Length: 515
Image (cartoon, rainbow, N blue to C red; front, side, top):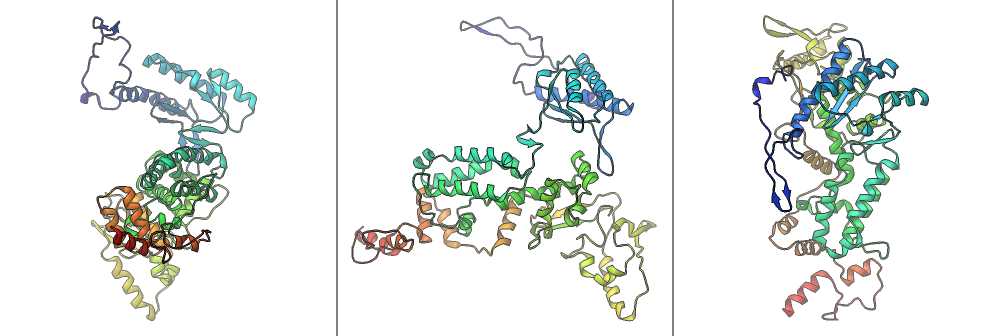
């Protein structure tokens, strides 16, 4: 606590007294001697404070060159310990010295903290070493050997995201949640609610990490569509409305069911946002060291170093036909050390200086420089120091004047950092909701449907709302609609008047007349 400089902010607390019910009668109260009770809200906080000592031990071992950390990328970003809740992961070079130091660190932690490490739940794994060496190291640490692939936080590690094994559990959960018996017991309004709740609950974590495969989308959409319209393996039902229409917002004529592909892209887009605005985080430093960070994400080419995950992320930001996400990101200039002067969007319009002034870009001898390298402070005032390959011709003077006029209102602030602004949201912060809406609008021109908006705003039962929506779109099983879908029937006449073909408007008129 003293090392964390938080000692003065804490008060000492004594634990509560407890009693036990014996044959229905409470025993005499006593003070527990082995720490907090299970379920105490203070327990996770105190555990995190104590385990911070494990990080301190590792930090000391690295500082004294006793432990060799694993180094990532060109900048050799060191990784040696990561902690998430009550999980701790150690990383290091696969050497006997590291194994011995790690064993000493764990033993010291036990002696100092009074906690016992459960080695039965601990595992050791290594890459690039023989199976015999791994087995000896495992025995030395008194734990079990880690087999690849393994699951951590619900994601398979050691398997490509393109593998069916990664997505099969999600498909099975969808099939279980959207089961046939629920389909029979729920009206259509309830089915819509269940589809959305299952999509929100089950695959969010996986969709926010991996780019979903097309065949997985097709399989999940098939499960959702069959559940919505009542189809199953014993009987096929007619899907009365196209699925891309079903996925539209309710105010625009759809049912508000999420489009899996666009939802996946919106979730993945947040990685780019977080990468630029949280560059001091360990994961961001690792990506910067290994791949090049933001620059490689929006303009870099794939190479042998790029992992499948990084390649998928680049697809989201480098789409050939539509760069919806990239087009709505803009830099806010601070010190200018992260923003490329020519290649990033940081001025008032949605163009880079390279796009707006291609002739001047070709003449510049600072094509790859960041903003802070394009000038300097002279008596607390920023002055541009632009360097060109040649002198300007007379016909280029007006172009240069317009270029310099655009730079006049730029303010460089050494004390603030550069940040990325999300233009699709008023507060400038990236959100999955606004991105999903943008992707929907970019894919097809969607206009407001006033009739649907009124229907969904009515305070009527969901069953009636869904029926009204289908009636409005003429997607109810009238005999005229069944004939158009080549469903054979003895007669296509209206069963009420038997004089005309049964259509939605005719049915409403006849029913209204009889009422």
